[in-house]
Length: 308
Image: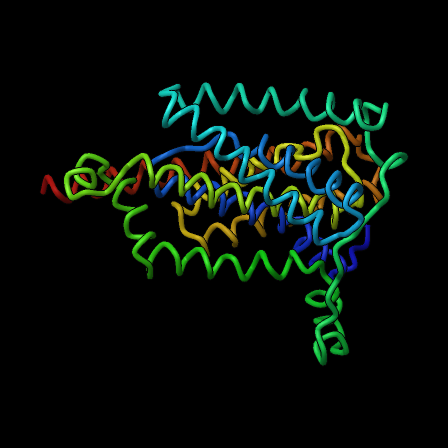
């Protein structure tokens, strides 16, 4: 088996893009003290919203806006259920993901008469790819780093933006304060409910970008169950990075590499397709196990040193 290293690395970056957006969405909720498992369903709804908006409005940028708005609205829906309706967040997110899985297919069927994809009924729109001047002409590096979707470059820019919001702005300080001790934050006049809504709103923006990438860059149509676990992998990535934006992007790239490897193996080996498709998810489980073991051992060492 031969691997084109430049193509492999380029595919790694492409496959990591929706994971980076998902991880950023999840870590914003995490810093506000809320574990948002609904990222998966938010991405799925946003992918359909982007493809639908682009088709009916006839513009790729309006489609992107529709995808982002769909992510925001679904995030606020979960926020309203949990923060105002006082529902259990975990159960709400599980129910929302199940609703999104069936609901997107139902809505797609109403609009297209098809239960699998919108490719035959909707006009295809693709967000532009960007060729970076000078870099595109450099052998190897040009193939790896240039020619990606505009959302891919935006994803890496957003890593810095989220870091800046969390650690250099007042709203970021309040988000982290509520996440660390909501009672103490409430005692100094910070509205925990308001901060929760803001966290879900920001999370919805990034979930919307992730879904829009899938239906307007990864491919140019919406398909059933398009998120395909990427929301959960994004959750795992930020959890392994302990809520660090930069660490989450690195872990997302590692998961992207496993997806790229599985894709390469499909075309160059006789391994069963079902086995190859589970590689990214198996890698996620193993990474969580090793990270948890490391965290437990580290905690034990700290406790042991404190006792001594």
